Length: 189
Length: 189
DNA sequence: TGCATTTGATAACAAATGTTATCGTTCAAC
DNA sequence: GTTGAACGATAACATTTGTTATCAAATGCA
Image 1 (cartoon, rainbow over the protein chains, first blue to last red):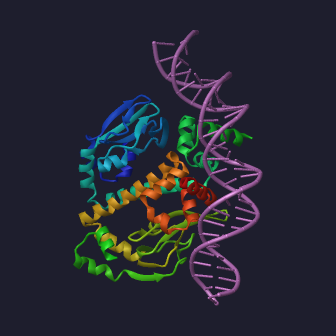
Image 2 (spheres, each protein chain N blue to C red):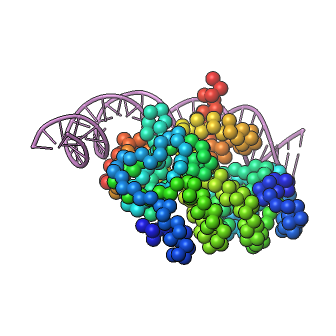
């Protein structure tokens, strides 16, 4: 697990040791809520094992915004950064092993680490990459049909298709589960 | 114009002076291409007056990804940062007054300024805000009907509706211009 | 093991959206 | 001013996608 983290924040081992005790381990069953819609995000989670989903309620419908797998780092980032109510619920959808850090500690750690040029670069890089991901994702809504979006995931993140219930994938693609079922059926032929 | 910039990068005036000569002014007519799809972005543009559109070609169709107005800062950011071919063309859609900085100089400036904690914070903040914007945009494709997306723009960025040809708005919303015309018609009644 | 819940497929029908074509208007270039 | 291109509205029709309901299979749990 900590290999993932060391990769995200490449600092020397001894410095790293100083932060280890900020990380708390959680072993959780499936369908455990990590943060409720409307609450303020106080923790950032690192996924060692399992799968986490961000979703929100729209007129009684459960709509999926994003998935995170092993190695992922998840929080309701706008809530975490700006201390505003979270627009999403964050929930495990598999039995999962997570590590979390409280916001207060995370802020302190970042404040120290950001002074180190390599870490700073890495941090900014991660931020840019996440921005690029979101850009690609919304461009795909302009550019691709739902069928094509499904094929894109199948190619780029096959894990998601294999592990995640289809109706969650459907709303993530912006379609109904009935329609996704039709798409799969059509692709078989 | 430079007020916008000073606001984005709040440094003392004398320091600011040192960078002024990196900014080159352009006065351009409408439909001037600033960067072609496939080229590598070498400049970042700041908009003093006018309007700029990022778009790409998909099977012969012209699809709009994003608009920028006065005060905006535009480049093909993934291309600018990673020196990869731009997925989009950047083009004025009104007679515009722009300022640009070459990537080499921008990198040098940022390298210096990023050491200053306030600037660094501001920079990271701008990055986060842009990320949040893209998140909201793609969530709106999951959550809202095209009609609702149109109403959202009308409310949040009415300037876009007023100034930008409707068929550009349409593809930005992920629909055809015919459908957008229908939506507007329906809203009249 | 057995039962309830979740998940996924499918059908029939309704609604939304795209396609193509036509027409009138606006607008900029000459 | 005249003209051609760009823009926007509209209609008719085709296609895609959503809705609702039902059923079968898979899954988790007592």
